[in-house]
Image 1 (cartoon, rainbow, N blue to C red):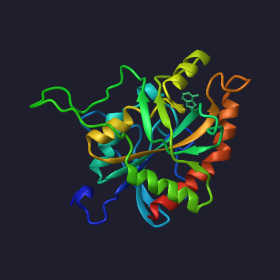
Image 2: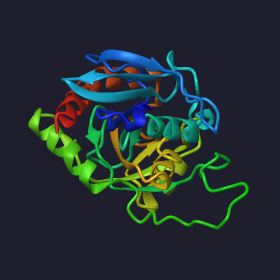
Image 3: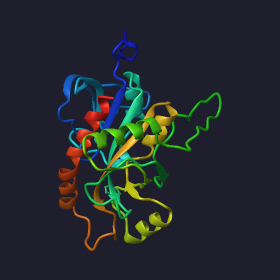
Image 4: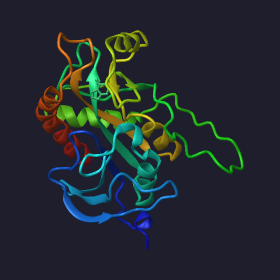
Length: 253
Ligand code: HPA
């Protein structure tokens, strides 16, 4: 029997981003190297249990962290997760904050996104097709998952903002101050480099999907100093325990 049809197939997948290459506390039951029609995912899928609940973990940037945002094979990652029975995915993303309430170490579950990425393979619907498909993408994140993440955070006493427009930028460089002002005028609250095409590919596969974002810096020009990797690391160190606590509670349902 394939894992996809096994009675206890893992239903939840977590894609860990910067600062979350491994899921601490995960009781690992196996690792799977999955080959997909789109190539290899970023890393082997780590199958395990967190707080007793089955989960599949995938390190978006590889383990160790080495794949930059514009070179992640998002199609292979989503496909691989679905192939082992995952039905719902939480993407954990490190982001820069634009909104005044979204400073370093703040956790946010955004409700919308704007895609500024370019040149990334961003659909499964290409090649020799029998018909053309345009999926609805009005709400890029699954409301049920968003609510569950918010409730889980509250339950663990983790302060979590449950709105926000995520700007997905190409990277790997950070933005100029003028670019951030433009994103703000566009209505964006957060900036990250990995939210797209991950969200749309999940939608094309009919997977439930939500983003759990950790703000790791003020976006360029939003504070009086430049963005340093040391400051980003400090925010990760401060905020990641809240992300982990939220995920553990979320998995318990
Ligand atoms: N901009 C884009 N992506 C990011 C940032 C940022 O400021 N911080 C973390 N990921």
